[in-house]
Length: 479
Image (cartoon, rainbow, N blue to C red; front, side, top):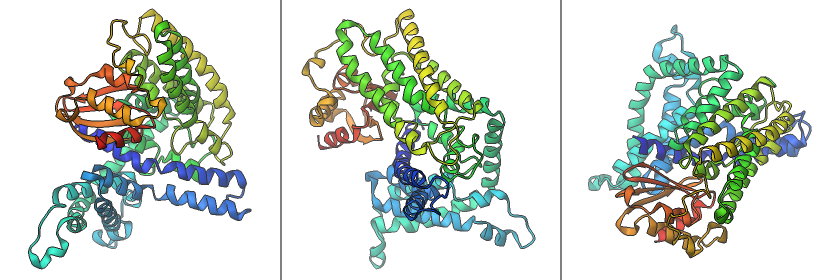
């Protein structure tokens, strides 16, 4: 089950990766015409509408992206099936159709006015991927041979989705009501609720289940839609964006402060290696908001520090919400999204986030340094000296962009052809299925430049590479 959710998390990153395009288009549009929303400038209107086309159709992107990501071979036929599934469920469960089914005098539950959402997009993608994986090699009788193989998957998906829609007809109002109640309960707590959300957002990252939590608060499906409303300007200034603003001080300043603390506490003979890893990871966190390379560098080496990091994130988000300091992101809370969102209509006192950022840089640095030294935590550069360093002597590092050499060393450390079953990747991780995860050489993998290794199960391994992971994955597939 855990492997399924981890694969789903990887699949979700495909449509989520489209969001920066919307951020760039809408951000530039608002910079050109911050008051008229394109009414005063044709170029601004063009850019704003182009960006809105992405934000407004995110559920459809989820249906297609999940279908591709969960299908064997990531085949385009699965994407078509995902689109077909989404068409069926959104048509059968539209308010107009539900009104026909219930009768002219029956009341249509409000849930069906929100049927086009991230949840149904994900369900559509999962059904399409299941149908593709199960039936894409199906051989039909000669008279129907044109529909054999991949061509039959959209047809079968249609049949399955009719059944799924019938089930959702009864349970969707219940699910919707429960999730809205949960969201309203947390939202009703104001800044405290925002902090609770942020705490669990960080804690769930190792499993990839944070995407499920994010869908409740960030996307349109359960009444909050913090990202969509913030970028569309449909909300309350100083309130909409409260589930985003507090992440900027952490990702832009707090985590780089933690990186500096880990570098200063590294052993003298390992400072050079730690510097390369931590500097690259800190820059990625600051500039783009991609935090996994840095977080995974200490998440399993010093799990207590990661809990502290989650708690500090909760404090930051709660404080920013209490101060009504909001900024928004379409990808993550880095410098790029901060600049793009600065002049959006619902951006409120975003300069406060910079002041908070400086404070959290100091807090992270001091607290991490004290805890690392006091409890002798094994953060990067503080590993035991007797650890095997033979692989490190090979001089292979991601910073030399020799991805073939990096892939070769990691592949060998994973056990090569005798152990590796399949290779996938998300934005920052290699996601591998192996015959036996205990047979891998973790030290050799880290020596190749990886930020960390996680073993969710006996047959599953994740290698934290960073934003260059796609190049490494490509070379590994060649091997």
